[in-house]
Length: 284
Image 1 (cartoon, rainbow, N blue to C red):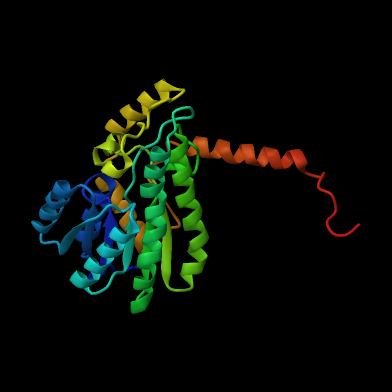
Image 2 (image 1 turned 120 degrees about the horizontal axis):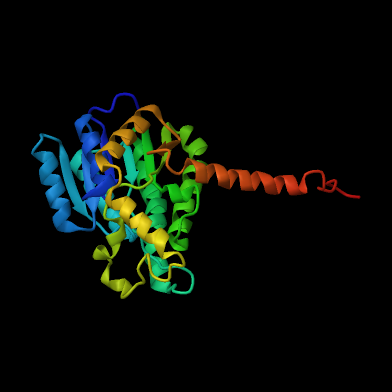
């Protein structure tokens, strides 16, 4: 999508952090943006801030873990802008404790926001993008933890899922004129470690991301890294470029490249363990 001016984008988790950075970058490129978030006051502040710069933006509150609310947000987007070209599944939470402290609610919340919202976002908005025949792009935010496991199992599961979903859909949707990108950010200056501030009441009490962590030093390192992390506006500009050039993977830095290299080297080493030992296939 080389020419973004006049296109329409729907961005979840848009009231702050990476989502707001993406919305700001797209708006600066002339994209009309529907901001979506569960945090109503922050959402209105974000909308007003972008509108003050003459951006064509609107906002809709939704709990993206609920399909019905995403569907309502999609209707609001079409009513306001007529069509949609770009879907940014960015909303995410750092919920769920470590092994030994898991609860049903913690897993359901984390899966609901981080993975199910991406699944339903694509299911709902994909046909809307197809309908106008002008092409489009789907960007879904995973994490570097979707390429090399981090320190929180439920978070890792959701982020690996977003990577797998994006990789699997990319060739399928390319035939329909829709590019698919997965954003795998490193340590970005967001409020991910304070995700429970937006916990819906229906989940009750859930364990914190750091609860039960076997390596507290690693958790504190991540917390400090996030506090001193990369500016979300930089990430937004990378996403804009990724949309324009249809990048399969949008990465934010090289800090975790050694960990990813180590993971793939480990996989390769285990292929080597069975090399030459696979029995012939077929009837024998």
